Image: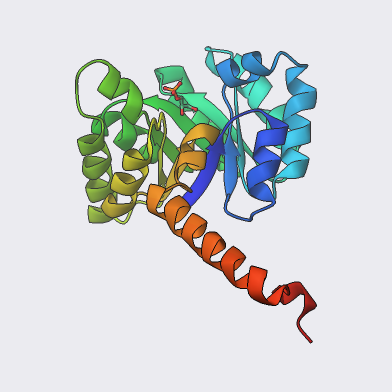
Length: 224
Ligand code: G3P
């Protein structure tokens, strides 16, 4: 499963890019607003920083206006993916853009029927929002299971991009279900590194080493 970072913060993105554990980035208007910087400049910075796909969302809601934003977005970088909301105008725009060879990510997907429609329209990615379904007292993960199964049944090429991820269990569940991508807020990705037994184990190794060093002094940096 690929990991994307769900963030518009260039420093946080760079931190994970430098470890080579991130395959792409997703942004949205709220994430760009949180940065409080010129959104076009910020997006250009991220496109340069990240070798993989970067989703950038249109804010127009009408077909023609969506295309007027989507085409310039697609020219900002070879890795630019245009994020389009799951609306009727949006799906018409996705169809036109796919015919022009422009990659799209259909966002705000909350049902399997919406995912099927997005795929039919020619979306490169569909983004079901699991956390926001959990927020209203339903379970978001069965939606991922349904979409993955349906796409497999018909060999649909559209990739399932699990979004609105809130904790590491969402990531594990998405991977078990065979989702193509999970887009992770930086704090969730950070939590995925940690385990108390790792911390306790490292402390014990270092304490034992200190005892040995008192006797012999050297460490491996001086090995010949
Ligand atoms: O990028 C879209 C999605 O991941 C938003 O997540 O936490 O605002 O529901 P959230």
